[in-house]
Length: 395
Image (cartoon, rainbow, N blue to C red; front, top):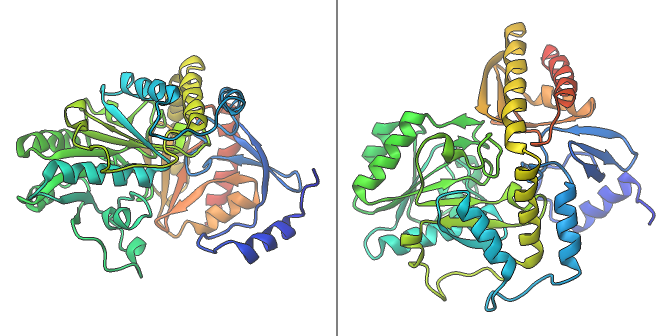
């Protein structure tokens, strides 16, 4: 099949697709592991693969094989019927987390919407409010936008749905002051990705867990970006010695396929009754097969061990770089979810990296977000650091 010229692809897109994304002039034609190729066969080192969707690398062989085999059998089945792969995937998630039940959907936003509904069912009839954190990000639906603690995401979309309020991150007293007799749940990202890779303190998280128990409030942990091994544990909450009442997943769960999941403790799972919520495509056989392939890859290829090892190496390299460059304010993160905060706007550094074939992300204006695949090698990290250091030198 003939590959279109890059400009023709961009023209085709701009003439026919709603322009709601900030676009980069790059047309990716294929990808493998930590590498992508454009239509001119130029090679890029991808250290921000699909907003963490390709968490185990692009086109991982176990995921590709699982999709290929399943595509020959069954692509979709109504959720009115039983689906073997849904059961197997739910069991795999449950056994590797806190023994809950799973609702499947198509994205992180949908998983969070399901969590909001279950929280309101739990609090019905008097408690409906959900408290989130400032600088959080929970998705782009209207309710998720209201839950997101960033005014820039809500601009031009008001009025926001009622029942959400945000408090400062890692601030115990602010949370205590915000809880009322209307509060049904507290929702938190243990690492705020879009908020600049800001990590929740262990003492704070344990306080929140205990506080929720005391007040009979649900604790929802948004693991859409941190889940499936990104931090060196399968789920980020496992670093904190606590268990949530609900956890939401997406991104890396499907290895490139669109799937989201809400995982809920069995004792409250029954509050979401037939007819209260649904997802037409949620948990289809093809995406469940892909997600089972992701679990196989993480376990059989020992990717948690590689994430911890390479995450430590990458962090050490960034800390050494900070010592050489006063413009670097702070290195933050956990595992292979790291950030370099600069004392100035980071866009120029991001653009230089792109021009040199390194794909990363710029968030919160002054922060470079670095999240390579769990399959990343030391050699690939060294290549990326060489480019990044040149970029920061030009700041």
